[in-house]
Image (cartoon, rainbow, N blue to C red):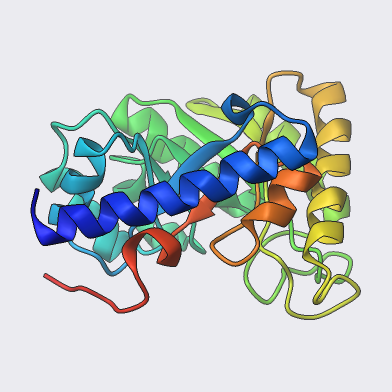
Length: 239
């Protein structure tokens, strides 16, 4: 095993222990939480090593990094998640490789994703990104729609050709009433998920929590956690 593969294996084992421990504390089964490894700034060679180590879900937040990486790893049994703020001029590219777009936060993006998915002959899963620091009708500082926009956006996705409403995503806010209160923020997202499932029963994904706060996300009821630094390390590895 190469040094890098050993490093990734050790990091994955530590993250796995954290998730398993958090599930046990919360009285949840380990199978209820899916790990998504965020590979931004890291090379395709790392993605290959992660796949060898059993990772099946990877995420990117910039199309210029994701598109070539997904192409280089097209032979691997991976689900690609796009988690960054998405501009409409990047939608056609993203629709070519992403299986799930987690950052849907405005009607214009839904329209563009639908057209691109139809053109590519693919179905894209979509999560509505909720910003718990957003004022009414505004977007959050890290992207995302205000909570009261959820029903409208979910209905738009559900009715759009080529798209599927899979659930919700949030990033712990740095400002507003939930700043510094990660678990409370994630609990609010789970409440919103319950209301979403009343109209869209299959929209069961709750994507929340990253390297620093995955335990709080698991405790709140997240179904997916997005972990980058704790698996890949803090320093960018470009190449």
